[in-house]
Amino acid sequence: MSSSRTASVVPEPEPEPGPDSGPDSGSGPMPTTPAGRAPSRAGDRSRWRRLIDVVDERLGLDALRYPVPEHANNLAWSLGGLTAVSLLVLVATGIVLAQFYDPTPEVANASVRTIVQDVPLGRFIRSLHFWTAQTMYVLAALHLIRVFFHGSFKRPREANWLIGVSMFGLTLLAIFTGTVLKWDQEAYEALGHNLELGTLLGGAGFWFSSSFAEHTPILVRLYSAHIMLIPVLLFVLVVVHALLIRRHKISSHPALRDPGPRRTPDGDPDITPDLTPDLTSDLTSDLTSDMALPADETPKELSEPFTHHLRRVGALGLVLLGALTAVAVLFPPPVGSTPVAGVEVTKPLWPFWWMFTLENWFGLPAILWGGLVFFVLLFAVPFLDRSPRRSWRTRPVAMAVGALLVVLLIVLTLLMAFTTPAAHLSM
Ligand code: HEM
Image (tube, rainbow, N blue to C red; front, side, top):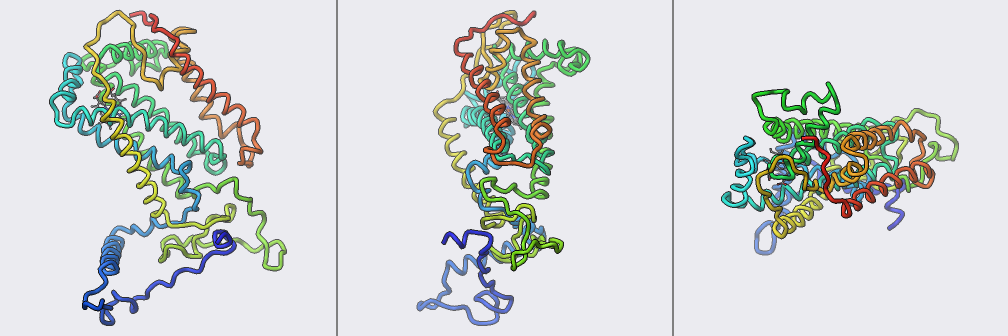
């Protein structure tokens, strides 16, 4: 069994029924059961297959059956896919919320109340949006940690790391702008921070100031960023991210032995050019010996069509959705009352707690500098850790710095429990 799971022993492909063979070919009578009926499961399967063939002929879906290594189905390697599932849930629930939400400051808070009290399933949809946003943040963070840990960001995948970090930053921005929308005390204080940070940024912070568009309240502009600018940017980046994964293939698992130089059957170094074909579009069966990864990442494991991986991520996504539904039903977020100007009494949503602690220690600019240092460090990862070594065992410095950063963030976040909101705004 184990030997059949190694690349050196790629299983023989199952013989595919040819155009003139098999029960569906039309060349012979359908096999029947004793009762004279065709076996229904085989019949359903072939009908399903024919439907797929019809769609595929028109849309070229077969291109999605390119090979991916089996380890891509591990939970850890599926975190990116689950982050994308969360984004889809946010867009779906967000579209429903947007039908009833009104960003005019005078009525914004009341419209959230209407969603919760009068719109059928409104409380649930809002709660699902709220919990999924935090889940997306956690999944994206875990995905980044996984990529860092396995060195999957290394050449030639540096650009995809930068895109991933950008999407993580956009998720944080979406949570921030979403929080402001509900227009309660927490939202108002968050907006106050937004305005003061905009001032600190000088000319670069012009978009964040109320004077940028005098006749359009900043709440309306943040709303447009929340439902259009940020999701569209996220989608563009998701598409580029996916295309780059397709181009570079899913990185091999560093725990699997490096293939080393290619050898001839006699054991001599193989100096002939590597012409490993990419026969993606020619895949006709589930497992074929054509499923080759790039020569530098010869697999020590089986590969399977990407569509199978998609199915597994879909199944995991359904489990995630089930869990989120339960949490959304059990713990709907409250709607705070309309804001009072001139006081600072709230704490932000937990993804911002580490900044909150820094702000308490060093004042409001610490949010800006802390956030900047954090993201500059993340963006710099592929430029700092450039060796081709990918296993964590061979990268002690990178592992130590990464672990230190994660521990620091967790400690700063937990310290928030002992931090009382203080006045930082000059408004
Ligand atoms: C990109 C991912 C998104 C994230 C991370 C996100 C996050 C959030 C958060 C944290 C809230 C505040 C929830 C609360 O405390 O009540 C919120 C509110 C809201 N979001 Fe999103 N959102 C996203 C995408 C969208 C999209 C695509 C739309 C619309 C098409 C949308 C529409 C809304 C609306 C209308 C509200 C205000 C209602 C409320 O506060 O419950 N969101 N969002």
